[in-house]
Length: 138
Image (cartoon, rainbow, N blue to C red; front, side, top):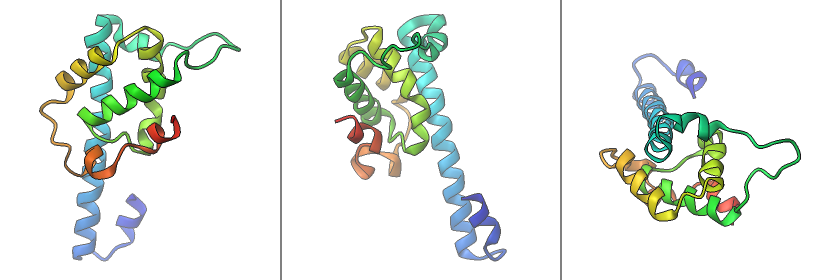
C-alpha cells in the first residue's frame, strides 16, 4: 500500500486518496490490536494479555471448540469491525478465549465495552461482511 502511494504523482488526488486509505487502515489495525488487548483485560484481568498469548503443548490441537472460535470471531467483528487479513494475528487470542470457557454473552458484553465508541464505518461487518477467517471456520 505504501509503495503504491510513493509511486503516485505528488499532489495528485489519487495520491491524497491513497494516503487517506493508508491512514484509515493503520488506525483500524491499531483499533483491532488495542480492542483485543482490552477485551483480554476485561475478561481475564491483569493477566489478560498473557492468557491471550498462551500456547498449548506440542501435539495438542490449537482450539478445543471450533464452533466457539467461529462464534467469537463473529461476535467481535459485529461489535468492533472486520478483522481483515491483518486480524489473523489475533486468532490465538480468540482460541484462548474459547479454551478458557468464555461465553458468547460475556464476549459480546466485553466487545461492546471495548468498541462501543469506535465508528466502524467501512470496516463494519455489515459493509464488508464477516472476515474471510470467520467464513473459513464454518
